[in-house]
Picture: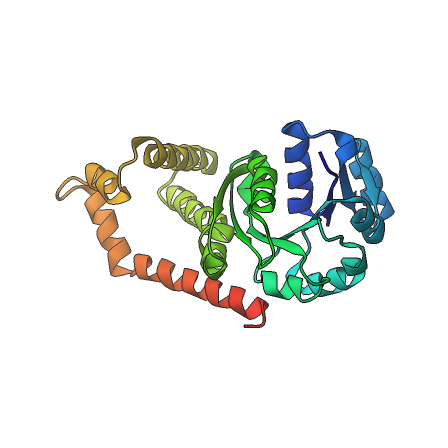
Amino acid sequence: MGTVAIFGAGVMGETLLSGLLRAGRPTDSLLITERRPERAAELTERYGVRVTDNVAAATAAQTLVLVVKPQDMGALLTEIAPYVEPDDLVVTLAAGITTAFVESRLPEGRSVVRVMPNTPALVDQGMAAVSAGTHCPPEHVAEAQGLLAAVGKVLEVPEGLQDAVTAISGSGPAYIFYVVEAMIEAGVVLGMPRATASELVVQTLVGAATMIRETGQHPTVLREQVTSPGGTTAAALRELDDHKVRAAFISAMEAAATRSRELAGG
C-alpha cells in the first residue's frame, strides 16, 4: 500500500483523512500538509499522522490528493511538479479545475483524476464524482474511487459533466439546508417552538430521503401518494408552483454550473 498525501488541511482534507483512517488505512501510510504550526500540532495529536510541507509530501507519496481552493491550485502544482513521478497519481478536489489544467502544470504523461466531493462526507454520506485525465490508467481511477469510498458513494462521470455535478451534488447540500431553514421558519411563523419545528423538519427530510432510496420509486410517484385531491399538500404545492420554485431551482443550478466553468477560466 503506497503513501497517500493530502495537500490542504481544511474541512474536506481533514474529512478525507479521518475517513481513510476509519476505513482501516494505516496511519504511517498517510501524510497531510499544513503551514500553520498550531494546526499541524492539532492534526498530529488528533490523528497521529505526520504533518509536513508540500515538497516533502510530494516526494514521499505515490498518491497526491490536492484539496486546496481553486485559486490556490496553480501555485501548488508549480511547487510540487518537479517531485511528481511517472507512476504517481494526482487527485484534485477543487471546483472548476480541469484535468487539462493540472496536466499542463505537471511533467508530460502524469496520471490525473478530477473529483467533485460534497460536505456530507463529514458523516460518511458523501457523493463524489470522479473523472479520469488523458493519461490515467483504469487502476488509478479505481484507486481514486477507493479513496473517496471511505466517506460515501462514488460515481465515475465524463469530465464534461463535472460542472453539472458541481451544481447538483457539490453545491446541493446548501440547497437542502436552505429549504430546511425555510420549513423551520414556517413552523415558527405558525406558532411552533423552533426546537420542535427543527425536529419535525429534520426527521421529515431523513424519512423522505430514505423513502426515495429504499423504495426505488420515482419522486413524482411518492409526491402524488402524499397529495390528496383538494387537500393540504395540494394547497401547499399550488403555492410553490405559483412562485415558480421548480424553475428557480433549475435556474440556480444552471448558475452554479456556469460559475464552475468560470472558475476554470472557461
